[in-house]
Length: 428
Image 1 (cartoon, rainbow, N blue to C red):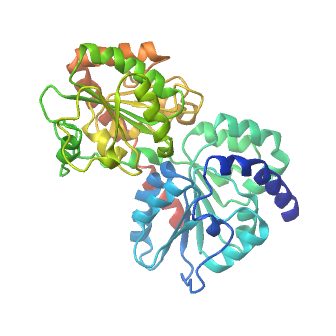
Image 2 (image 1 turned 60 degrees about the horizontal axis):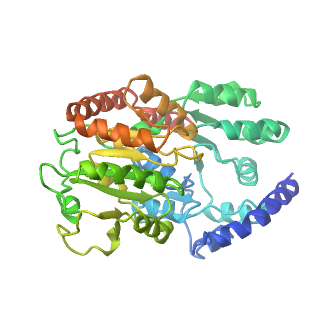
């Protein structure tokens, strides 16, 4: 079976290698993915948590802290696939922990890394399946637990075509803690034993600290005044629209809407935070094409009150989006006007911000539906509706306040998945 998986993974790797080279995704940590570990690595059977990218890394932050309290003698290993996820993981690590990249799923690489790390438990965030990794952990009698598990529409279709292989791999996982009953039923239909599945909710509702909120909709005890000053904001009439996690072809729609809005609302500023900061050069050109001046936040060294009314800011660094969500008046979450599946709307909502998103939210369908069912989320089909709905919010500040209050209450009602997952982990 190892040979079959190796051949499949080799074929997939060769197919995607040109794409990775073209997109410059072969980062410095790639040697870790080839199985290279520090020679003196001695972790004494740690707990290993894998979070593929930024979103998953943010989600597991609370679980990592809970694990430290539950198992104070254990060191933590955190692996990711992306460089941006690795940066978030580095921020969670304590002395004695180990942050690395997930080894490529070739049997000889996986065996080397697992034998070197020798975990007592492997926790997989969401449902990223690596056959050789899971199989070798299973053979070594190392428990594997999936937390915040989900089976997307596309994954379900793919898994269904390979059910004869997937069933065996999935049943080598000790426990699936999944987000919804739909995810549970999909796993059962793929052949997973029902007693291996627990519906525990979505850990994303626990990922942001919003338990105590000021009237400004900022978390208590945090001061974001420096971020406002960095953008030249601070006046009573100043408004900020943050377009977060945007993708190619979305910036044009955003800029067209903003171009029209800025004619009537000269006090409205726009900050674009691309999902992939390496696209900053491309976005600058688009901004210039629409007659505005781009301003990268990484190049701002002092207050920019004189930035000018035609300035549009670009967040070209990783790890600061939450801070700009916190000072925003209105947020649009990207990856949703195009078929990318959307991104996490809970982060800005937890800060009390009205959130707009497009029709393609299939990666966050349950959360988006929950917001829409409660008349909180704002669905926009295109650039025209994006402009119209932002204009409506600017005209009706009381609507923003109402949405903010109901967002926070809805999120509070759905908290607790992290704690429930921990209880099952302790029993493993």
